Amino acid sequence: MSERNEKGRRYRSARDDATVGSIERHIEKTYGLPRNSVQINRPDDSDARSDKKIGNLRKEYDKAK
Image 1 (cartoon, rainbow, N blue to C red):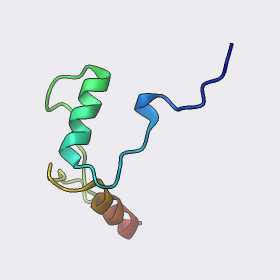
Image 2 (image 1 turned 30 degrees about the horizontal axis):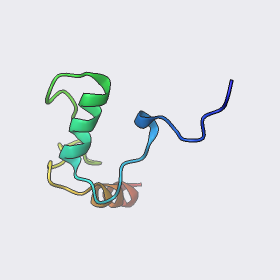
Image 3 (image 1 turned 90 degrees about the vertical axis):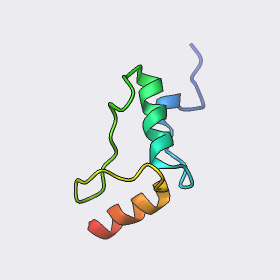
């Protein structure tokens, strides 16, 4: 059996310029979940805005550590 070089779709990291909303929709589609069932949170446990960039969200988490 040959080994795969590329990681599966669900294991890839989100790009920094992607929005929170697009990543939430991608997760729902990949796992077959109902719309609006995925929520990405900020470090203070509040809901992240859907137009926020993933790169900015990562910076928030780095500051919170």
